[in-house]
Image 1: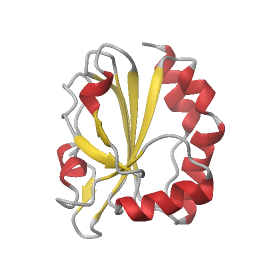
Image 2: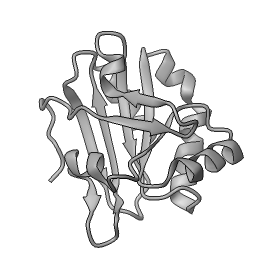
Image 3: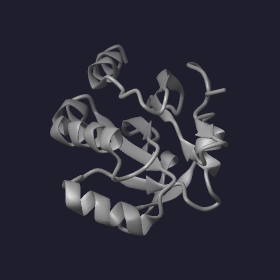
Image 4: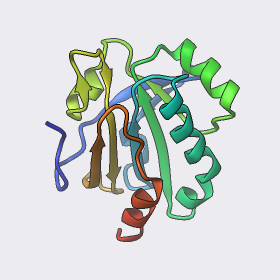
Length: 152
């Protein structure tokens, strides 16, 4: 079961598509964070969603928000994916230990070995303020996420 609105967001430390370490705590007191869990790089729905985020990054920046996209792919896969699609925001690798962060957020599908489409808005104090979890084939609605940010 996914973590709930009002819960303290589980802390994490993951490497991004450039090998840099990114911690959720890096943004505490500074920015809201949208954490987007997605199944796999280079798949149709995931690529479409992440490119939509890319095309709408100013909508997040204008709301003092950092986007972090998390999958269970390796950093090497994420590097190529990010370069190919022109993704300028951090793509975080929850590859090893496989799915630990996805499990902490309650969005890891044990049978498929990947995260489902979980979206979590975390405020500047580290509290989950909005979330939605979609099934693997169901793309998320970015506008719903932006509307939720407007309520913070």
